[in-house]
Image (cartoon, rainbow, N blue to C red; front, side):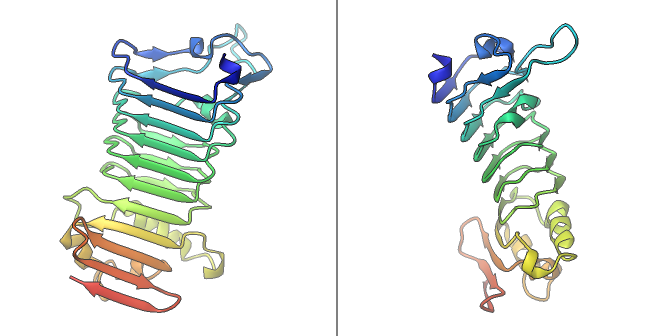
Length: 244
């Protein structure tokens, strides 16, 4: 059945702490594991700590195996103790969407062949997002995120800030400043949507502290959580509108 499976949703499993090579069902030397799988979701696995896709061979090398070669969408929700994504996930060469919510122990998301969208929500310990090729990034309530880098194809960023945040995160300022060394015609990062508190909103007004960063982005929408107060800015055509 595994070679034919297209949709897999695993929910529950309080006793599970480790998922190992047995998840593949059998060894597939020189072949593909889950070759037709397009959708994979893990949900409500509160004690799951480790995901090791394959064991090591006697010579210390893993088998030559392509994991999830046709996977399009991968979701993990309420897996708070999982420390890392499996290295083999980098073999999912057709991965378009990755969604991670309340995976509080996960520290980094790096080196995946992610083609379109990454969404992360309420991931308390997430520290790094890097070396990815997606076009769309949504970050919500990730207070310890420090490094967002090497996202060369990023076009749109949606950032929903923690309610106590009163300043733009440093990683966003760095991301914008790095783009300043690139000719504007070569920019891929073209749209920012930001939800924040009133203090942070006001700091982004024209002439205030964060305006020098905001004005570098071609299309910007900043609003409070209620969406009653906002800043809208566009370079082409020129437009600036604020209600604070």
